[in-house]
Image 1 (tube, rainbow, N blue to C red):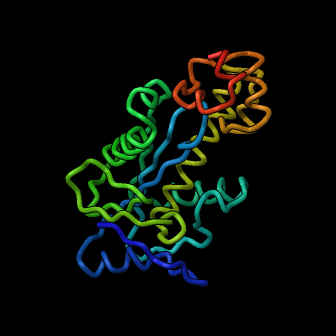
Image 2 (cartoon, rainbow, N blue to C red):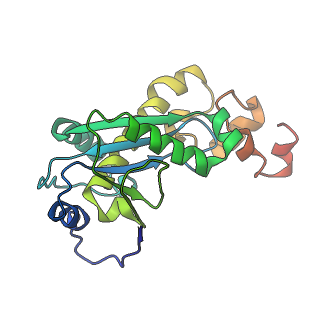
Length: 215
């Protein structure tokens, strides 16, 4: 099932969850991914089950929040979650199966990692290859608290990988700053240093001819 909804000025971020609660679902997992458009690193997905009836103030699409606010909400989400899990798919697999399928796989891994089996999945603009009831919601990270929570957990997880691990392992690329996206600094570093094992080769061919000769 796919739902397309016009975004109201005031968003009821529990509207989808509330409908499912009335139908008897109690373990509703929000699912989202980050890093889909990056040149470097894993695509990371999260699945989060929050208690029925709980409203966490400030939950939103992770891209609309400051880093400080995301970090605060990350701790709040993990402290209140019934269950949460993260799934990752690396650059080599992304090159083999394409980014959409890799994103769906990361979501599947995140759901499979939950300690509590969900009754229903609310997914941001995708479907997951699992035999579970699920609803695909366009702009779900904005419209659903559960998906917004998953978006924040995935974003903070990936950002910390960029800052605390990948930037140290691959110095000179500025990974901690641009998080693997195709900024001018990142493209110039690729020209100077060449790609690392964590760069997505299938993405690099989309850039200009000068870069393509290097890869």
